[in-house]
Image (cartoon, rainbow over all chains, first blue to last red; front, side):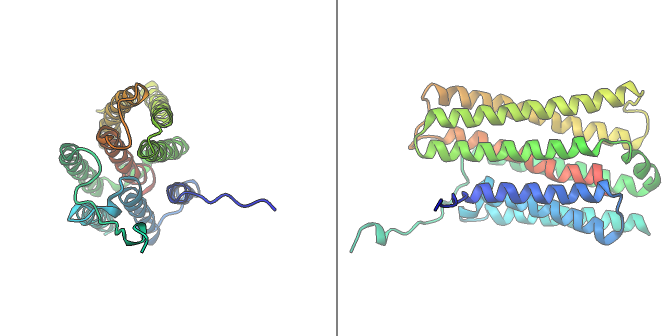
Length: 90
Length: 195
């Protein structure tokens, strides 16, 4: 019986990010729109950003303020962009 | 009691690489955040124009470039893992692979620019293209900068300049490259998809 090779955590994260990117592309390809969907697209971008911060930059294993700082950056930027998009609908 | 069973892994206090690069990364992220917000708020005044011209962008090229940068970032993670295991030549090969994907990104983006410019698009065409060209070209320059850093680190690794004990340079270059990736992950949906 052949053992299934175990994926490295970073490989799993990479594959997850590819899937999330394809989801974003599907929204564009299918011409989907709507406030909820755009917030979803933005949320996917922020999740991918957090995955880069945690697993690629390696800040998950760093103490102190570094990870919270970058997570706050992503949250504030996401909130500002979402706000701008919502305001433009009005 | 076995000595290894008592080992506790304490989180490191400083991020990987040189602290100076992190100051630089934070400054860069701040600049990009301001540019993204200026784009989003400028769009508020020209929603129809932005939506119309966004449709002219090649989203497939945008997706391929996203996959290219994510994969190159993954290769850089593998390079860092390799040098931590003292595998210098493997580290160098991963870095060159990441460098190659950086070059592919530039090539695809170059084709996109060439297409738009051949259609007569310039910075003055309208405010959407002003932002599209400015934002993506600013990022394009960062990709070039990141590739220069990756090449320098890969060459040094190739010559045995790093080891499992001393590889700050590899982590520094890796951190910068991940920042370039991170910025694109927000830029792509913002400019190519969200409308």
